[in-house]
Length: 201
Image (cartoon, rainbow, N blue to C red):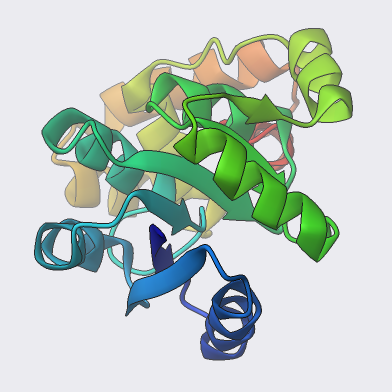
């Protein structure tokens, strides 16, 4: 029996996934969480074989939580299951230790097969998304540039960002300028849109 942990902030999606997976004779959902920062505690308690993790959740994002799970409990296989099939997300998921990356509009049979294959020690990545990821290339943003750009994407001013990240206004402007240059944008808002569409934020 393959034990599964589900991490998704949308109750309806989480419930539907659990019901679907529990119909399979060799799969059982042993834990469900709605926040990424609840994954570790649930994993330690339920000892799943596979963790099915969404990217965008409250707390920390799913990719950060996946990296922590892989580092602390490496025996648990990780499947990133998200609405957003962005090339940058795929690259970050693989770097975080995920064994598979599945978009939510994939057929149910594909997800079930992915879980079984991952449990057997294989990696599963959609070929089309893998090709897109290679074409888009890796993010050239530094972690701090990503932080500043993420804050800018919310409409925060330079002063707001400086206070939020404990930086000087000049440093924030430098990071924004670098991010604008690296994304080929004209404004910080455009840079944030480009970075987000590539899954770099």
